[in-house]
Length: 193
Image (cartoon, rainbow, N blue to C red; front, side):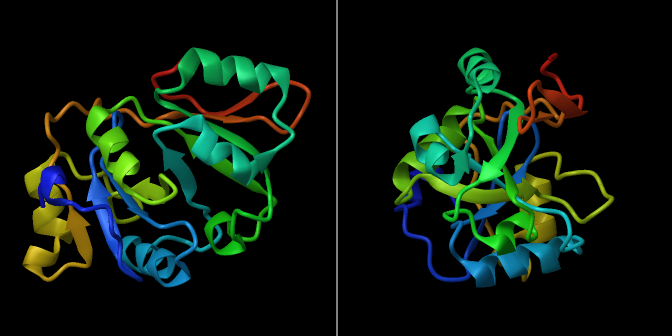
């Protein structure tokens, strides 16, 4: 599916595949428990591993988190949009089925114009996301592979959106825990902290 053909409506249980600035992603509306369940099934993902929330704007994500420290605000100002995932204490708006029952949730704003355009079409502008791959395997390398492996055209469950201009780096985002007095890097990606 081309982004130009996407009207922004996501039906109940629907999962999207999309390119980001790092790797290909899977996503659904954050309040759609059935779709989140399908994401875990498609990936063979352990339910103890949470999804993260991504959007094109910080204003869309901030209602899901609380206790945003000054150092976290500085990281957001410097690296959003970009390949940085920040983990905060969650508010009640972030469902337990996304956070695997944890009291934290990760947020990110990819620096990818196609993904940002996608979010601008979706009501609320937020997707619950993870990488587009089966657990312990590499993420899809390109659109054709994403469609072939996961797309509805081939019997899969994912509506894969063709990027306007492919530009992923192939390097996962840096993940930083922001619940303490200072940032803790949980995964080093392309963004140096």
